[in-house]
Length: 102
Image (cartoon, rainbow, N blue to C red; front, side, top):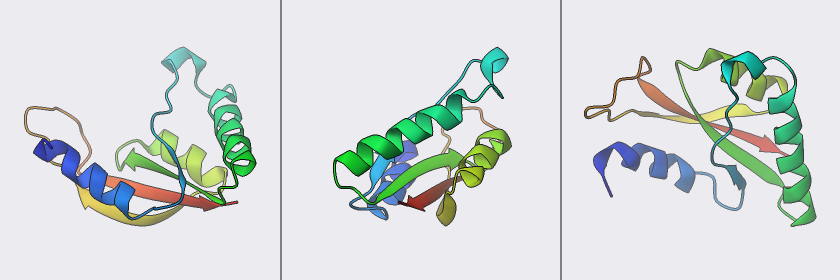
């Protein structure tokens, strides 16, 4: 596994038996219109139908807008790992694991 993915995998490993929301994104012009909340609610319904009682998501510490969305919808921080950037340019320094119990 490439070094830059190791911290992400470590965080995923800390959230076994959760429904992991792998990627959630919106075009800049579509942000703030409720799409993210709707997608998270859909993920929660699918997880519940599958009998899974918790959801997890990983976000960059620099992505404050996404972090606000996740916390507003009930996700709470449970762990952090330092980013390994290699040649990747990103303002953040850590990955943050958030968890929501259903």
